[in-house]
Image (cartoon, rainbow, N blue to C red; front, side):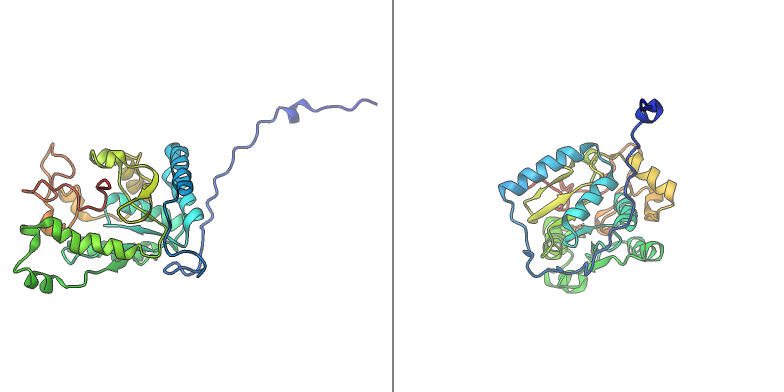
Length: 275
Ligand code: SF4
């Protein structure tokens, strides 16, 4: 008797892989869970090669795929910094689904808009995620007294260094990777961002899941999912930082034209290229 081969079975197309949407949970997100794990990563040749290869591989991946890989590779030593911009809100929304235990922090310079601070509360209400404030050593009052007035008027680089950069350095101690929400089309400096790379300035891996996204992509996600956003964006503030260094932009101006008006400065130093 001859065996019958069912050709329909033979020719059946392989089933498409279903993306894994299970949230990744991990213990003790705010401190290393394993004392044997080094508190900092060393940029060895092997690690740099791994990051370069992974960055190339993830060029065509979705931001969610980039985040999922990052969490699987680095959590619980993975963190995210946010200033609650539209891109940051998009990543928070994704992390709430992928890895809600990821520690997220905000550099609370003391000069943020009240709308920005209120957005932190809206994030807590919507996602149950408590974004941690990282605070400078000195209050605004103490800082301005020490320097005889606000430094943002005369030395914004120093003000950013004292009230942002130092805080980020401190915030990533013990972490192996951090996520930023930059897009390559935001500025010439940001155009060179890799999806995954070694951040020389802060000494850990930097992941930019939205590097390939456009402003339209970000706002489509926000409107499709009713993601909370800073109401100042509806008043012409395309990029929101500290209130003394931010203004609404005029029609036709670059999105970041409203930052540090009157100075050559275009970045606070968190995302500028490594020296
Ligand atoms: Fe200071 Fe302005 Fe920098 Fe904020 S953005 S830290 S106020 S210089």
